[in-house]
Amino acid sequence: MSHINYKKTGMLFAAGAAICYGISGITGKLAYGGGGNTVSILVYRNIISVLLLFLILKTRHIPIRVTKKQLAGLAYLGAQGGFLTAILMYSSFQYISVGLATCTHFCFPVIVACIYVFIFKEKLSRTKTLALLLAFAGVWFFLESNAVVNPKGLFLAFASGVSNAIFLTAMDKLGLKALNGFVISFYGCIFSGTALMIYGVIAGYDLSGGMMPIGWFYVIIGAVLVSALGNAMVPTAVKYVGPTVAGIFGILEPVISVLLSVLILHEPFGLRSLLGASLVLTAAVMLTLEK
Image (cartoon, rainbow, N blue to C red; front, side, top):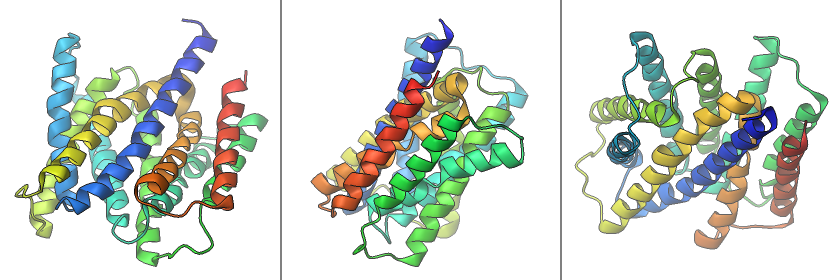
């Protein structure tokens, strides 16, 4: 595969993951209405995901054996991404809208870029820098002037963005990019599901699974979108285009999230949101066209 094809494949996977994550945020909030809570939704999503991923790995004859060093790295990624990032993000849905939470979460491309510039001394190209600025500006245009902002929800969403930036950087630096994306997602779901279950028991969350059928439906859809598809696409995107581009390109997620929240959850969508979506898409096109 040529260098250009690698880039196109990486960006396609980054965009695909963003779309899956954008839809999953909506299913997560809808699952609350079906009787779920923050931890139970995430626990059962991970359990279902492990089963789905195991079937995928066996069907495709993909080996799941990893070294002890890789296992330690996967345990960290599961705790950082599937546990900490997810629980912060889903907790924010209880205080602010899905659109606002997702937009605030997307501070992470800026944080990823800052980590690589100030810690790893990476140089950003002019195109990448401009795309970063446009995308960041676009995200904040989503914040409607009449939106009700709960400081706790805003903090949780921002913290999830910081956690996700660390997750993306760690994935790049822990030497796990050579592993198959489904293998990474499989182990990530095992470790994050275990951490979530322990946390749920200690914190006193109801994990009995007493959700209504509609709640289970949204949990299953979320599992397929996030763990079987989205989480498997991210490692491939990072492998082919790097964490900075994957992070910026992933800003397509709030576009999908906001559009669906308008159609399904009836959240407001005004001129500011339209302008924000335009800036984000412009940034994505710039990255696609960059040589």
